[in-house]
Image (tube, rainbow, N blue to C red):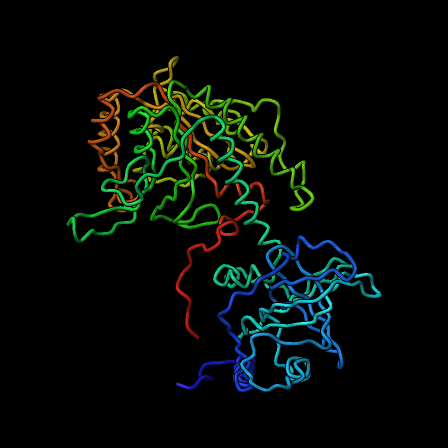
Length: 514
């Protein structure tokens, strides 16, 4: 196979440039460390100030005896002026060095996309633009594929030839990050959210822990797991669908409060709100209930919101995106459904709920459980009405197998969900700590899964974790727990309507070869 097989015309041209550079004794991929004096975003203008930076060449204007380029690193961009410069890392033995400006610019052996290091001093052009006058250039990595050329008309606020095809952007996120500045900002904000949550929880004295990703029983939720096999142990293992039961074991073991940023995996459908791999913050605190957790969640959400808004000028947030009231409304789910559908489902059985769904034009299957029917009614007719943060509380007991029975109504559970911008952001309980009740609930869930079709059974399979029941029998203190969808929180704070936009590498079908 030749070096040009399956290459486009532009790729062939760049490969030929690569060979030419090598023939001139210029290593296009040097090994030696390149020391920089500044990140681009930290440069403050002082006339004649010496600068040494490295980054990707993203603009190039060759004028003849001199040229302009724009260099980008992860902190920003700066213009550079090329005229007469030396070159480092050359393997040539000649005492008299060639004209490197001619080699790189007149022979056009440098390209947009190349990663270079430049050393020089600062000055301002006639247009008053801060620029580096390059005295030395180093090619650090030759780019063999052309970048999409996105053109920005700042005057008219228009973008031309944007790299905007969704499939290409997700599949080639590395290109997306190079050419679309706003994409990089999303992931800077994501990292900031993690940092601020950790600060908040650590200050409260809660311990960050790690629990198994490979589990012998996928417990803590009702979902279809990914399954694998461990050759040495000779047993099937599952990627975790939730870490809840392990964190509760740690509360039983004596920790007062524990949390984990958990990577969870569910072998289910994909849409703009769901990805097979996703991140959840799970927190469990002993001697608390769901009323305490509502207050705590308000405090946490306000803290995150305020911290992110401190970077308002950098990340261009709108302060009125969602309104964080002094106290979030608390609305029982039965009341919410009645308000938005006109139906009081308080004491309805399964058949009556199916009839309600039909009248509301909600698709149902005859074998759906009561919990699933109520969930569908709320999701389709109620959830989207709550833009500002709202706690939906007191779910029917059938919907919450891990939650305590409500202290004032045995048909309800002590559970809430936090809805913001029409989507569930968090789910929390007063955790069930009665081992006998928990065992019975698990058995009921398994019985329900056996009464549905094979496909539905696979989707909603429930595994009985006998060790977790055993741990409860040693005694778990009254505890409240919450799971916060980090991906959805990032979507909220960056105003994205698809989970794929806030995941660096979302799952996709294999690329079709052309």
